[in-house]
Amino acid sequence: MIWRTIYFLFEYFIFFYTATAMIAMLLLAISSMRAQRNLRITLPKDETIRYMLKSSPLTPKVSIIASAYNEEVTIIDNVRSLLNVYYPNFDIIIVNDASTDKTMEYLLDEFSMIEVPFTNTNRVPSQPIKKVYRSRREEYKQLIVVDKEHGGRKSDGINAGINISDAKYFINTDVDCIVEPMAVYRMMWLVVNSHYPMMGVSATMLMSNGCKIEDGRVVKAAVPNNPITAWQQLEYMRSFLNGKMGWSSINTLSNISGGFGLFDTEVVVKSGGYDQMSMAEDVDMLLRMVTYMRNAGREFRVTQVPQVCCWTEGPFTIRMLYRQRTRWARGLCEIVSNHRKLFFNHRYGRHGTMVLPYIFFFEFLAPILEIMGFFFMLWLILIGAVNWNTVFIIYMMIYGFTVSIVLIVLAFDYATKSVNWHNTPLSYLKLFLAGITEPFLFHPFITFCSAVGYFNYVRNSTAVWKTIKRSGSGTQPKRGGQQDTDEGSNEINATPANA
Image (cartoon, rainbow, N blue to C red; front, side, top):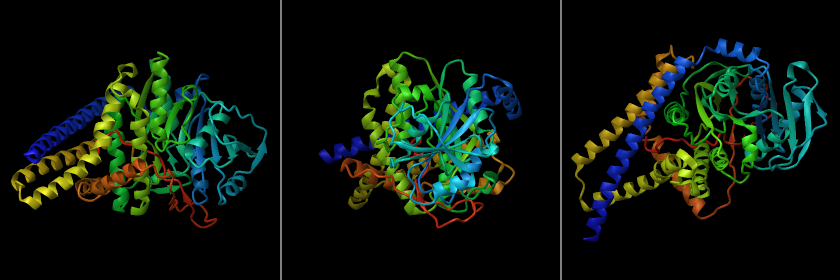
């Protein structure tokens, strides 16, 4: 009798859980559509944005900060990409986190760097800075290279860059990213035209895998042929164009991507800077900023740019993807634990009453429930209690909804017209094929990675940042063997895991 009751309750719980997740996804899609439509109406063309901000003496300064550890394969291409940025008042701070390869040597040689005096403000905690370099050449005057003691994590490097920066705003990025030249203009336009203080701006990112890159720019966008990266490409599009745009429309973004995101420097400093021990530093940082602003009684906005601003190299093997996603899962556990005081706490606004509960129920719990459902289904098969007609109908409804979300995301991508693959139907066909195969191949693997990450967190295993190899764009001179480096942005998607 007790098993029959458990069976009955579990069935109804899963039904209402899945229905709620689908409704949430649909509402996010509607909110995203409205937000993108409003931005298309109100945002001027790139040329107008560039003229207005370039001609104004009040345009705020921006520091682009990237932490580098053993990045010799791609460091020159990536720095050149940052130097190609269009913006009238910015600097680039590359923080070398005691690399053991030739990253520092290549930077000093390629960009004619010399040591200069510096003032370390120590506004946020970081490992000691040893030396600071600037270029002798005028064309690289924006470039600053910081050499510091090893901190072991990207967050320590970003904190060191904040301590060197004198800009009102900074951008946290990865050195493996290829930045669109208009990226900073697009983000800062939203800052200077906001009716409320803009605490942060999240930029849409896509995969650089498969793209043609020349002189630090993506000259031809392409969907990767590798199914592992194609699935990730679709995942990124769903996260940014559907999830984040939807949350942005009601000022409830849960994170600003560590791959490319803009922050108010003062608010970050007042919030204590990046947590050097966090495995989910991007989500953690934004939630601590929200906590600080709410406690101080200050109004704020956090928004999302729909146009692609940055391209990042994603894991292209199962092993690398496993490392990344188990780390993300562990980081999600940290977020749920460390920010539990926000749950259903109206003092912290919608982030407390909506965002944290959403993350817990539809991000954190989803892999656990899926694994429970899998074994529950096996048990029903063993005892012969499965109504296969009902199972087929329910599964096809869920699968049809998932494919519909894929089509909606592809429509959003086409509407933004920010990527130059719109005239190549083959790219959209690849993305659609990725969408219809994802539930059978990619998603089960991601669920498994989440389970491993949760297990590692529960047993309190040593938290380390694993490494993956960079393939590089192929344009940087080969100055040595490929080296291991960090896995890119610590993106935790604000979308249901089963979508």
